Image (cartoon, rainbow, N blue to C red; front, side):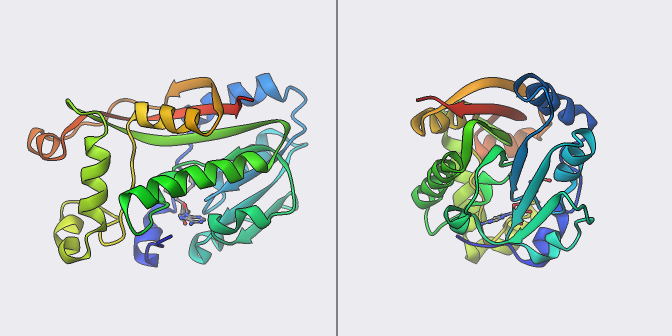
Length: 240
Ligand SMILES: C[S@@+](CC[C@H](N)C(=O)[O-])C[C@H]1O[C@@H](n2cnc3c(N)ncnc32)[C@H](O)[C@@H]1O
């Protein structure tokens, strides 16, 4: 899997799960883990701010943040209930542990390989590994972006992957605002996310929109074949 440069990763040192988005996850946790006593693994957890929210709101929980960016992991604040692991999701399978909640927030679209098909496969493999790390009543929590097509639903995903992963035009895509220029990104539409979860035997217990649709200029929307673009949260369990 490809890794972004530190200058690109730096922009991820922010609080993605803000108060509004937090309420969406909190509702799921309160329903499924009412005693607040659970373990979690935040894969691609970066600066640890999401883990810190979990630890602050649930004093009995403890968890691990795994990320392959040393830069972002170093931004974590210390907490005796938080473990940090600097590694790639490719090695998740070697974790010798089970977790009640595995979160993959805004991570899956970054698992870029040498082709679009390989990137989609990286998402499948990571979901399968995440499933294998769940406890009996474990849940998977995923925030991600949904790039829905104007007429052909999966087309923006395909176009954006090819534009952002092409090294030869990386200065152009970077100027167009793509932080992942030269490496690539594999956003999916809402329907593609749903099919991906179902194919991997995950049941959607809850879905919530996580913010207003993004405004994008008409030329850009037409160029990328973009319909509604928004963020959402999936709360999933194993379906078999
Ligand atoms: C958009 S940021 C999201 C950070 C965090 N999950 C949040 O919601 O605040 C993507 C994160 O995924 C991490 N990441 C990307 N590829 C990874 C990989 N192969 N293994 C582990 N972490 C990865 C990045 O370093 C970064 O911290």
